[in-house]
Length: 107
Image 1 (cartoon, rainbow, N blue to C red):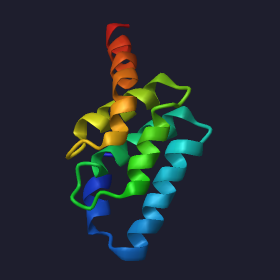
Image 2 (tube, helix red, strand yellow; image 1 turned 60 degrees about the vertical axis):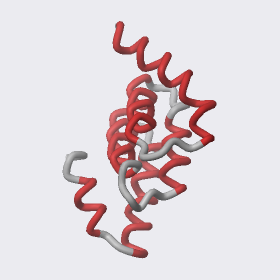
Image 3 (spheres, rainbow, N blue to C red; image 1 turned 180 degrees about the vertical axis):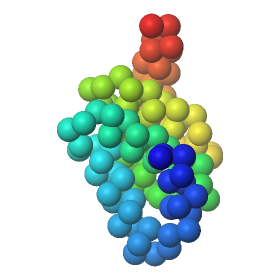
C-alpha cells in the first residue's frame, strides 16, 4: 500500500496535499499500532526525495527517529538516506540512526 502513496501524493495540490500529509504525519508519530507508525514513516520517507519537500515531513522523520519501536527508527534512518541534499539538522541525528539501523541489520 505504501508503494502507491508517493505517486498519489504527487498528484495532490494545495490544501488537499497538506491535509493528507497532516494525516500521514499524525499516523507516523501518534498511532498506537507500531506497524501503522512504521508504514506511515516509510510513506513519508519517499516524500523527502520529492521536489516539493515539506518542513513538516522533515520534522516528522526526525521525530520518528526517536520512536520506541526499532522498525520505525529503521524507516527513519532509510528516510534520511533518501533525502535530496542533506540539511544541517540531520547531522546530529544521522550517526545514532545509522548505529541503530546497523544493529537491526546484524540481528
